[in-house]
Image 1 (cartoon, rainbow, N blue to C red):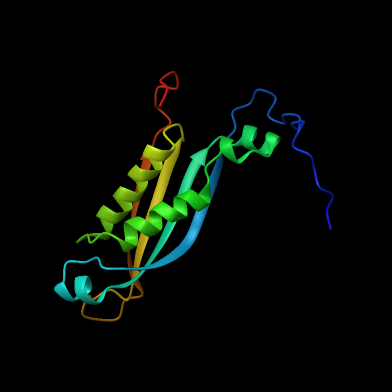
Image 2: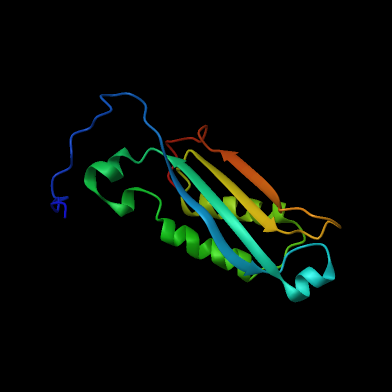
Length: 148
């Protein structure tokens, strides 16, 4: 078993003034929801799979081993679950959009967000593994001097 590391003293920065970036991701979070343009999809529901990627510089979080300096993926999972299971949208595009907006509302200083929503076996009249919609927001041009 590895040795516990105290986070009382941060590790030295390895970036040496270079620009750094990272990505925190939830991959294939699965929920049951009621989305689609067909009445049956709203009544019966179906399985939805969601990926959320959040781009940010998490060097300070890593150096200090501090969750408050990064994206809490448990919190992201909770609001994704709420958006998928407690709403009824016609389009998976709307669901991806709402998830991305919630990430930005919760973490306004992140550099970017990418959300993919998949609907396995969509009702398209023939064999199809899945329909998916990906929504991406580049937030890197935000005004870093503005407090949220």
